[in-house]
Length: 311
Image (tube, rainbow, N blue to C red):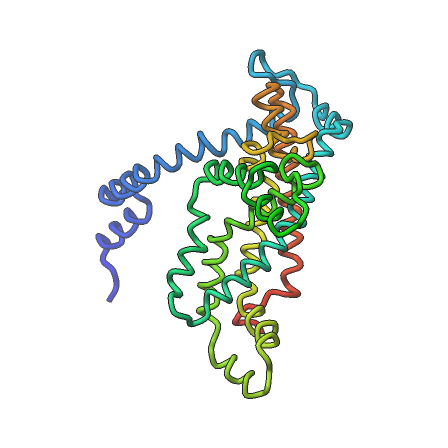
């Protein structure tokens, strides 16, 4: 049946938005997304673009920004504390991300075993991740106390040397890495969810072929959960490059800048020294480093990440 002229006019009005009901629905739709759109423009897009502009200026919040082009970036190259903070951050990232990934997978494999009280064990391992970061930092300050901390008390009791932990330039970064391993509840839960999706037939077939437990883990479990490993590695990279709260609360960048992480130094420049232009340049360099690391991991994922539809 062919459409009448009236029907064609209604369809044309509907598509063009001249229909009153269509206009009303569109207005209601825009009103619903307006709070998010305003919040995004004001609290995300505007600070993002303004920080890019400020990175090319000398700006202290007390006087108008003064354009200095790439002056802040050139100054960074000659700032020894910038290089020290970058080294500390890379040190933390290179060690903590692989170690935390392996440990989280190992714990998830253990928690995936069918044992009595399985839910209790899972809850115990997840609980540290819901403790506020500042509260856990204060707790670990006591644990790492070289004089009367619980860790050193135990080491002395078994006849082992007691390090200075947070008060030692040698041990402060390993101390923060150890502390980070305590709060792996979130990635462990994600790995547990991924393990539930591994087909049991693969394990049964491998067992019939005589594969041992470790070979089954390496050749079946790891490839099947590799997309989740990729996700957690990228999130770990991003979080480690922005490592701030624990170092700021526990060490303030000491001793002798041994725990002066990039985000801590950026905070100092912005909110202690009021060098907002310089801090903005640091922030954009951090953005570029994180972007480059993420792209590098994504590029490498083609060689080690397996998706179910791949052939």
